[in-house]
Structures are given as C-alpha cells and as structure tokens.
Amino acid sequence: MDVNTLHIGGMGFNVVAVLVTVTILGGALGYFLARRKARKESLLQPAGPPKDYTVFLKGIQYILANDTDQAIEAFTKAVQINSETIETYVALGNLFRAKGEIDRAIRIRQSILLRERVDAETKLQALFDMALDYKLGGLLQRAISTFEEVISRAPKRLDAYEELESLCEATHDWQRAYELQQEMRKLSNTNNQHIMAHLRTEQAKIEIEKGNLDSAQAHLKKALSLDSHCVHASLQLGELYWLKNKKKKALAIWKKLVHKNTKWAHLVLVRLQEKDGAADEETRVLDFLEHIAEENLDAVAQMSLARCFMQRNRKEQGLASLKRALEMEPDLGEARQLLGEILLEDGDEAGAVSEYRELLSHLGPARKRYRCQQCGLETDKILWKCPGCHDWDTVQPRKRGG
Ligand SMILES: [Zn+2]
Image: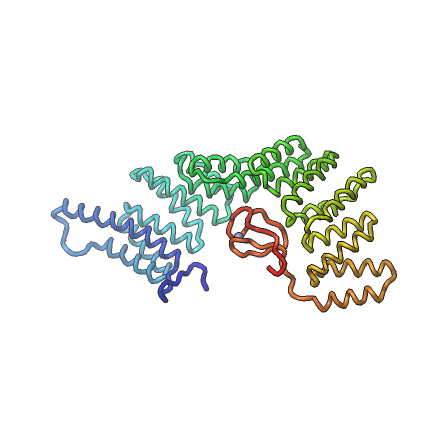
C-alpha cells in the first residue's frame, strides 16, 4: 500500500494531497472574500464569474482527484492571471515538493520571501517550508541554516526546534543538538533529560576520538547526572576509564550496570572480549568475570562470558557458560560454533561433528537481537534512538522467544 494513502471508510485519500488541499482551501476562503470585496468596490466590474478563481478552483479539484500535474498547471495559470495571491504560490510550492521537484519548490518560496506586500507570518512560513524543501532535497547544511533563521525570527516555534535538532543529530553536531534540547525543554516543559544524556555521551565519544579524555569524562559525568540509568553513558564511562588505565574503576562501573539490569550484560562482555587484557590486570578481570557469572545472565551474555573465559585460559568456566547458553537457547548458532571449535582444539572430532550437526539442524532465519518496544523495528545492533519511530531508549534486547 502507498504509505501516503489513508483509507477511511473504504475510500482512499492521499495524505499529501489532503494536506496540500487543507492549506489551499484555508487560503482560498480569504482569497474569495478579498475578490468579492474588490468587486463590490468596483461597480464597473462586469458580471459573471471572474476567470481567475475559476482556474484556482479547478486546481483544487485536481488535487482532490490526486492529479498533481494538472493541479500544478491550473495553479500556474491562476498565478499568471493574478500574481497577488500568495496562497496559490504556497500551494504550488507544496505540490512541487510533494512531487520531489525541490528546486522549483525552493524558487517559489524565494519568490514569496522577496515580495514586498507579504506579511511577516507568511514569510516566516515560507522560510520554514524552504528549510523543509532543503532537508528533503538532501541539502542538510542549507536546511540547518534556514531553520536557524526561522528560530532567530520566531524563538518560540517548537516545530522548527524539532526539525533543527534532528538535523543536528543527523550531521553529528551534538553540541548544538544538546543546546536545542535545552531550549525545547524550556518551551514545552517535557522530560527530555534521557535524550540529553545520550547527546552528551555522543559528544564524549567524539572527544575520546580526538584524545581529549578529560573533556570526554566531563561530558559523561554530566550525562549520568542527567540520567543515572543511561546505559549508553555507563558503558562509555567504563570504556573511558579503561583507556585512562583506571581499570578498577572501569570494572566497577560495568559491574554496577550489569547488576542493575542483566539484559545489558552482553554489551559489557563484548567490550571485554575485544580487550586482550594486560597481565597485571588479569586477576582483576577474572574476579569481575566470576562475579558476573553469578548474575542471572541471558544466553547471549553467557556466550560472551564463555569467550572472555576462554581467552583467559579458563576453559572449564568457559565451557560451563557455553553449556548454560545452549540450555537456554539451543538454536544459538554462535554458541554451537564456539563449542565445536573448542572440541576440535581438544582433538574431539566426533564431539565437534555432533555439535556442528546440531548447529546445521537448528539453522533457520537469523533472529534479530534487538527490538523496538514502540514500533517493532528489529535490529542486530544496539541503537539508542530507533530509526523507525525516532524515539530514544525504545530498542531493547529481545527476550527469549520474544
Ligand atoms: Zn521504534
């Protein structure tokens, strides 16, 4: 089904067309009244319907019939007959945007902005529309600077803040996105501290890349003061301490995180799996792993734990974790594969063959590891903001069988 089509009572409505129509119909009323007044004032005006609004009405009929091309033609004619009707320009701009003809849409907005006898409100809307055109046309920096201008002219326009903030996220300008969230918080009084915590964490990651570890630490501390439950920030703060060679602190943070909610344990363990571990810290890491092993871990975490143990030559503990993982999820392919590898290393070919046979019998469509609680989007990678519904913290590890 066309995503732009709504079905109401068996009738299909094109959403874009309906939106454009609403804009135009609203404007049309003002237009008619103005025309009527003008006619009354001029007694010399000949009787009969003037040509200009007949053409205008035709344009609206085409929109209702979902015929964008004919509508554009009609409105273009209407503009030629009477170039003073701003509503027609707005409608044309929106029609061009809906058709993906962004350049033409932008030119129309510009023509509105350059007119002298247009009120500030209409010009502001044209500027907003132009920013949206730029965004849809992929000209993100232009869209950003245009939305910035909208905000400077109308500092309370929440929809402009929202658009601009999402563009700043898309272009990784986390600092500006954070400032905009602060403004939005003041304007709408909604609780967005959990979002601000993510934005600070993203800033911290950039500082880490640049080698500015102290600045990164300040961002992460701020993130956790905004939202003490922010998993993203806790993971990253542990990472930062690890980089600063403060491994005791790193492990303490991760331990706390796992203890709070074991569903995030695999994210911690995967990080440890990637670290070879200096010999002097091994005892500390092993203590940590043994502590984690006592938590109520899910199959994926058990498997990561198994890998961590194996890397540190703790085969017995590794195998125990692996078996627990397979008891919980017999079709966890990665765990069977690891078990097969271990058995082969031990020279137990028969055992390995039997594991691989099991692995093959369980092969099916790969199940995604995470799922958005809000829109149902599934992913294999943890995403702190769902690309489907654009909400934060809605993507969660899937429960067994879920
Ligand atoms: Zn979602």
